Image 1: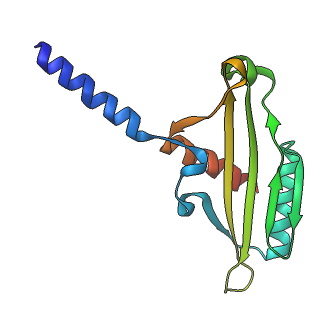
Image 2: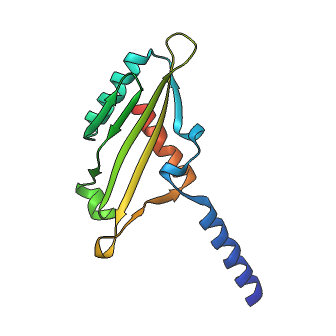
Length: 140
């Protein structure tokens, strides 16, 4: 019985460790969405999303299709529950060959503050990370 418990614990540990990912390390295809809108409208909608969510924009380059934000600290209930986490968003927009379609690849970088000023990437399951990207794309 004890051997079964040890084997089960090892298997469960491997599953948990291998199913976690940081949000920025999801494959690009899982962080990409094609919008049925022209490039300019999608760029504007993405900038509006960042502003609406209070991410301070530091770069908008229309020619390169890049939007980068600065760090945003969590606040309110999420800070109380999760501790000090800061996030930033980066977007790359590309025109799709078809008319009025734009491909957007997002990268969410989230870090948590630790002891003595240390920082580490926020980890979560791949499914939860994909859900978070879906929320972003739905908001755009």
